[in-house]
Amino acid sequence: MIVVKNLRYKYPKGKDYVVNGISFEIREGEIFGFLGPSGAGKSTTQKILIKLLPGFAGEIAYQGRALSSYTDEFYQDIGVSFEMPISFSKLTALENLQFFQRLYRRTVDLEPLLKRVGLWDERHKKAGEYSKGMKIRLNFVRALLNDPKFLFLDEPTNGVDPANARIMKDMILEFKQRGGTVFLTSHIMGDVDELCDRVAFIAEGRLREEGSPRDLKLKYGKRTVKVEYRENGELHTQLFPMEEIKTPPFFRLLQEKEIETLHSGETTLEEIFIKVTGVKLRD
Image (cartoon, rainbow, N blue to C red; front, side):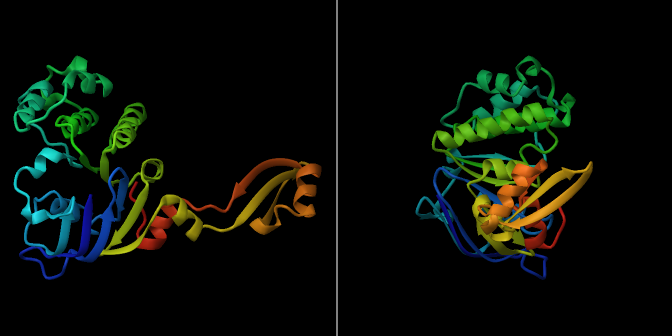
């Protein structure tokens, strides 16, 4: 869907490149995670990809055509959910969505979407009176109202309660199952791990790592199994290389001891994030 080659961008008054020579591709029908600390170049890259920032260097192709060759027809294909919810505060939620519907040739029925995210009963309430979580859910519905082929989601579940975040993640996965493509940025690594087919890590404007969550965990994890067991009322720990879990000492431990836990040495995306970017995730 999108191919990016040697993308560079410097703000007009900036001295340094915010995005400095990155290359990647987003395949049709996948969820692609774009991860990095604040100020790494994530938002700038997304703004370039949705044609909000012209004047970049490098090449970007959307469905085989140069992105710069597209006019407003491009926006018929995409849906965007910004990290900071944007709405007309004096209009109701429904009026907000109906306003944006008029900008598109193809739209969907709003009622099922609003019911799904728990906003149907509050549809006549002014958007300015919504809580942060409600505004984020309204923002998410707006991204879907034109039945897009491609979703750009920036921190889509940040500030949303777990129950509604679960609903939104299910909707993202269903969008993918229907053939949709997603560009996702998030600091919630559990969401990234669950949703993304591939991820790329960016820091200081450069791509540092790319791959599927599983492949990256194998690359950065340890091939070990940690066994915790009780003996004479005391807790003990023994570490086995992965190659030794089929050997007699491992089986003997399982048979003879009171096992409490078994842990593989698999790392987490959060640990990979910190190692690759050198920056800890924010709370």
